[in-house]
Image (cartoon, rainbow, N blue to C red; front, top):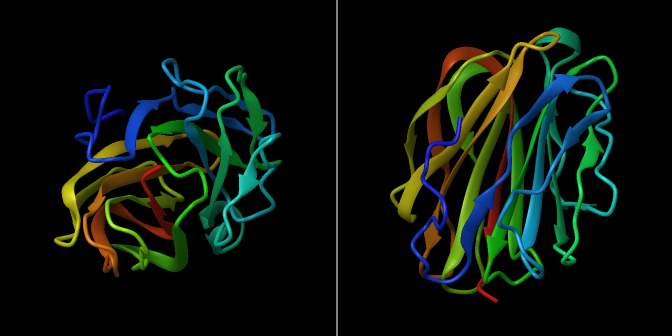
Length: 221
């Protein structure tokens, strides 16, 4: 479910989310996910994938972030979060992602006015819980856009997002699938106006689940 009207969110302090693609859902490692309409050459594209905790098929042409994947558990109650990036070439098409024998949920986000080298990313995972805590990350320049991402292994939603250190902070995506053994992901975003530690971003799952979590800082171009 797309929660924030686009374009353009957040307010254009520097890098901003220009477009969010349609969430792709399915079973196995051949789920097709498309770049969002409105993405353009030079945008930073992030492909975010949730599956059970196994080897995710990476989208062709994308590079995996250094602290991806983040996973916990085995088989039906497990979770894995993968995040991949590339720079929009001016002509992009759908890519295939997923995990054989698993639910797959994926989306591509376009970020504009961004330094296309990720400033910082951190990750963590947990066993079954309703408490979400995306780890702190230390940005090195002012005005970074910060994404907090959590993947989970049940068809639920996420609420009560909080991070007092981020300006214009809001949830931007919250979706799930009942394919195979269920799963989903949610994303919140805001700005770290002054370089430094973001602090943990917290939230609450509607149902207890294993989790994979990441915090991603994106600097101005």
